[in-house]
Image 1 (cartoon, rainbow, N blue to C red):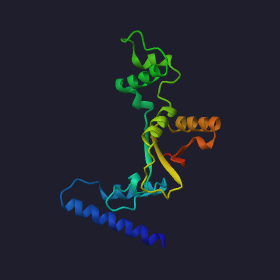
Image 2 (image 1 turned 180 degrees about the vertical axis):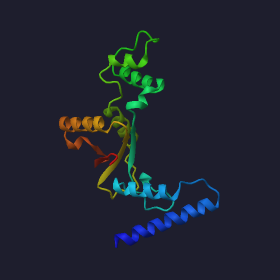
Image 3 (image 1 turned 60 degrees about the vertical axis):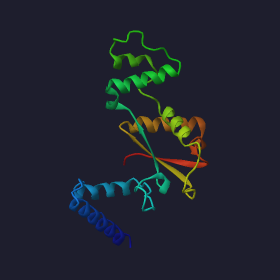
Length: 181
């Protein structure tokens, strides 16, 4: 029964939390741990089956994650400079007046952020060796953490319509992108 295993999981979480509290290790409140567990089930990310791995480690059969910086995370000078650097590498000119407001000077580029394609290319380069311990998975799940889900989904849809669904393949496995519910 799915309910009993769910209850057993909460019992284990409660037990581990109690042990950590007893050892005076800072932990989340039990209700936060349960909320996180519930959230993880909603977004359907595979959990590791290996006891010596973190719960969500890819080598244990889990998933990959990509943090796409957008929105208010682009208000820091460092993030804005990284965006400018990306566009300069793509052949666009650098700002001439380095004392200008950096945020407004990004308007000279096609977007004021690094496109999803740049993240995808880095992901492919990093995962090019295809040395996965769990080769039984038919689909490679990639969780995309971003505050601009709509734009990233749109970029993925546009690239899919241009290149076809097989464009999203890593190590001969199709890819499923997962966003916040």
